[in-house]
Length: 169
Length: 100
Figure 1 (spheres, rainbow over the protein chains, first blue to last red):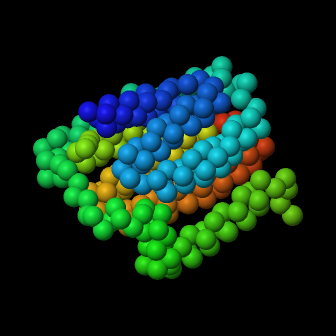
Figure 2 (figure 1 turned 180 degrees about the horizontal axis):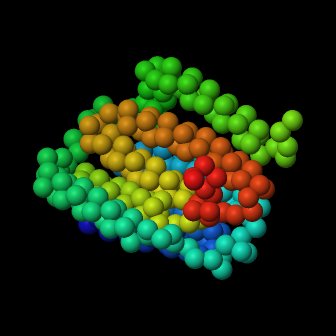
Figure 3 (figure 1 turned 90 degrees about the vertical axis):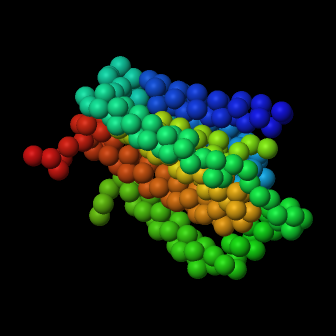
């Protein structure tokens, strides 16, 4: 009973604060609600026995990316855009398209969801520990992908510096 | 024990919210935040299916998705600073220099 209650509280928090992210007028409020959503998603990770990913979510997403967002939102002057219209002209069409997409996906999950009703957890998996397994997979099976990801981060770092420089010489 | 398709449904809902945000908002900062919502929905699905199959590969992919999100946020916010310096606007429908 307790896992169900926890799941519904966490998912309601994620969905409601997600809706608040896209409806707030002030971008700072949106960032704060996005942080709430990220914490709820982290709790969902924890429920699925992925504690390493929960730590990554809190440290990297909330502690890194969201602070960067908050920094830029406060750097860019938003007094003007708070008073302007917040939604564009084709908002009704956009909402209808997204709701149609949601209805299609939810119907497919409703019809075929019983195929994966309950997870089969292997005993060996639980014995070894999540962080150890993730580390082994990262540095053995996915080593090339880790290298490519590090190169991507380097490119992004250089690109951000170039982009935010005051003048192109 | 929560059935796996509940997690997938939650991911679908969060994905739809993110898509609505991308398609309806004018503020480019909030469009970028909606993209973060979409990436989180993808992560929920990856971790749910990783737990369902009893393998750890989905979690590794979720780490790569988070890496991607970090790179994208850094580049995107740098672009916005450059854009705001030149155009003095944050609305996506006013940035139409390539439209004629």
